[in-house]
Length: 87
Image (tube, rainbow, N blue to C red; front, side):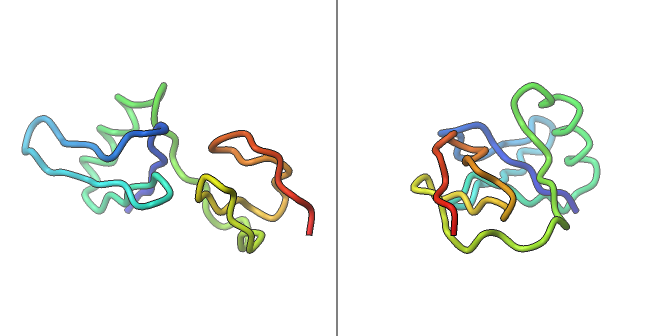
């Protein structure tokens, strides 16, 4: 299983070979259960799609205005670049 962050304003991905669709959630992420699809997305989309980093603790609890929930150590939103208030 892999999670990917899609580029801004991208609503999802349709796989060419079998037509499987992965629709983005409200924060621009997709969850891919098929390992072959995950490999294809990772190898073909390196310029545009980023694998989500997980395991760094919980988010700050405050969502950015764009809807992204950043990590506690983030001072700016990695999705839109806005400055995040310190809590």
